[in-house]
Amino acid sequence: MNCGASYSWVAVKGSLDPAVVERTKGRPLASGAITGFQALCFLGIQLLIGYGVLHPVNELSRLLWVSSLPLIFIYPLMKRITYWPQALLGLAMNWGVLRSWAAVKGSLDPTIVFPLLVGCFFWTLEYDTIYAHQDKKDDVKAGVKSTALLLGESTKLWSASFGAASIASFALAGLNAHIGWPFYALLAATSGHKAWQIWDVDLSNPADCFRKFASNKWLGGIVFSAILFGRFLS
Image 1 (cartoon, rainbow, N blue to C red):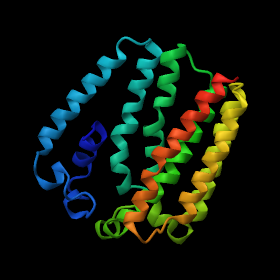
Image 2: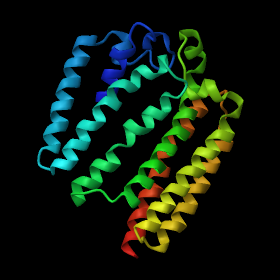
Image 3: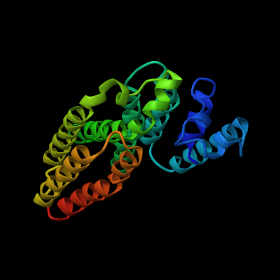
Image 4: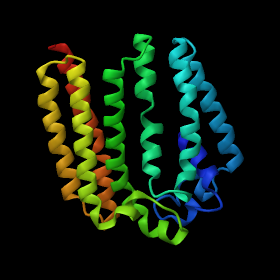
């Protein structure tokens, strides 16, 4: 269980109990194996460790870490408020793009880091919308919202748009970083993977939604390889 999982359960308890969601009812908090207070204590320990890891890096990186905390803390509440909680997740999950760049470079190059952040944001919208289709029946019962419920039968078309925006943003970041040709070749492979997972997914089958979501670990490996080999041969 990570920091986000600990806080998310505490934040939504009372309006969306994970114990009534089929996919999450066996988790430690939902099953009662640990209490909400114990989760908060664990959250505090993780935050302290996280700050300890950041302590040796430069001030800009630390400030960016602190600036991400509001996003992390409000995200679990968004399903009560908006059909776009995945948009908040896209920011909270990928704020590390800015922190990591600042930790290495000591500054931010907006022509590279912001297209990269935007690319990761749309990637998250894409895969987490597919992921949200696992819980849409439970979400309806609980009266909470998600992009899966909002987009419904149009999910694949919207996901394709998110994927295209993600690839275009990654390409712009690579162009501005003067990265070598292998980056673009492997980015084409990334596009193929995205196309497969979007058009092949059975949105009425929770198990297949999870399989397509989990396949993003391989997509991440392709993107990492694209950056690595593109930089090596630039």
